[in-house]
Image (tube, rainbow, N blue to C red):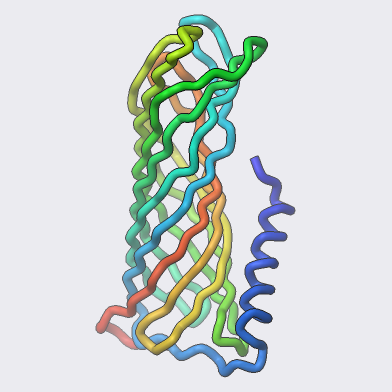
Amino acid sequence: MVTMLMIKKQILFIAFLGAFGFGLSAPQAFAQTSRLYFAGYLGLNKLNDVGFTESTTASNGDLKFDNGSSFAGALGIRLTRGLRLEGEYSYSKSDLSSIDIGGLGNFDIGGEFSRKIAFANLYYDFDVPWKVQPFVGAGIGYGWHSGEVNDTSGMLSNASGDDAGLMWNFGGGIKYRPREDMAFTAGYRFVDSVGLDFGNYKTDYNAHEFRIGLEWDLPVGGGY
């Protein structure tokens, strides 16, 4: 699991790129036309190696994943000029690449993990005199997970199953508003979950998400 120091460094790096990549002398971003907005996100998920225990053989080790993709839609409301609340629903999937069994070695393996997550996210957009605006955020939610393990090595049992549990995220990014009713976003967040059970396997889920998105102001309500 990444440390808070690593996350802070990544957020500061993103803000640095926003400041100097687009110019500190650029005019301030346009004001929003509405307090309500819709957002869509497309992401690349890099999963950490996930520890597991397998009850049939009492084995343990790490599951290793290929990079996966994620898609999300969200409805947001701006509580103040800087603070906004967002309800998000996302889907992501990652394929298993190999399994590291403690004391026995690393073996190729098949299978996949997918998840649907409902998040309530709180974001803060910094009021800066640049066209690129840094933001930070965190959220809590609930995830519905499906997992399948196909052990071609014959060392462990095959299994599949579904589980659900609490999840949370935190991260940051930058936003560029080319016009009043629309903004492009790019960001990073770390996503984590409670322990999960898939058949004979006990494991969890955590991932680094790198996302791009589009915010579109809805033609209702007043703006800031």
